[in-house]
Structure formats: C-alpha cells, structure tokens
Image 1 (cartoon, rainbow, N blue to C red):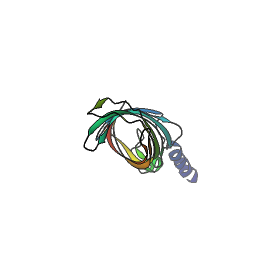
Image 2 (tube, rainbow, N blue to C red; image 1 turned 90 degrees about the vertical axis):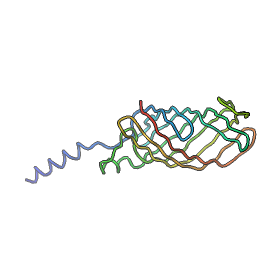
Image 3 (tube, rainbow, N blue to C red; image 1 turned 90 degrees about the horizontal axis):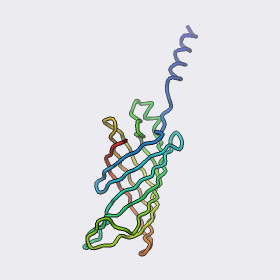
Image 4 (cartoon, one colour; image 1 turned 120 degrees about the vertical axis):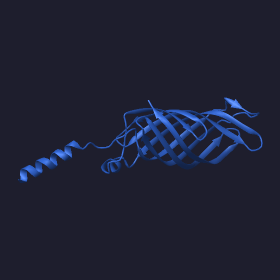
Length: 170
C-alpha cells in the first residue's frame, strides 16, 4: 500500500512542469495612444528581454504634438509564474506580473507633426506591470513606473511611464 501511494505521488510530481517564460514571443500592440512591435526572448525561467519599436506622440502645451519613433530594451522579471501555475491560472505567452527596467531611445526625428520638431531623448524607467493572455493569441498589458529622462537639447527630467495596451501574439 505504501509503495502504491509513493508511486502515485511521484507521478504527480514528475508530471508537473515548472512554469517558465516562453522561448520567444512576437507581438503587435495598440495602446491608448501609439502602436508597438516587440519581441520577448527567454533568458531564464523567469527572465525575458523585450526589444520594442513603436510610434508614439509627444504633446506640447498650446503648440500641438509630434509623433516619433521609440526604441526600447526592457529586461522583465516575471515573478509569479509558478504561483499562477499552481493555482491553475494561465501562464501562456508570459501571462504574469513583472518587474522591468525600460531603457528608451527616442530620436529627434518626427513621423507626423503639427508645427513641432521631435526631441532626442534617452530614459531609464524601473516599472511594475501585468501581462495577460486571452482568446488564444491576444494579450493585454498594464504597467507603471517612474524614472529618469535626458533630453539632448533641454536637460534632465523625471519620466512617468504609464501604459495600457492590447495586442496580438504571432
């Protein structure tokens, strides 16, 4: 009897796989303002490197807006994948909570403008966020962070990164 119980519990342990980030995920995402193409590449079981190119606006009070490219590298630590898996929640396509450090480069070029020129800038923003997958290949993300921004012609500022996006995984 003891051997039978041991055998059943061993089968259960070996059949469970550790929750891990996906090997590689390509996405297109639309945000409250902007569009982005990105790839998350697995570094370890809970760490992914996100590379992203997007088009987003900058607003100038009383003077219109500029739509400019944004290039981002962001290591992400998905800290609750195992817990989600144990509770039976979806972890597909990196569905979990994450901590990240977004490193952005915005060249001084503009794609669309209303009387303004783009401003070259660099930023580093630590952030927290969630990512969830639904309906097979769709996802949504929400995140918030506060960091440092350097504008080449104007100096240094604080930067708030607040995003809400919906996307499709290829």
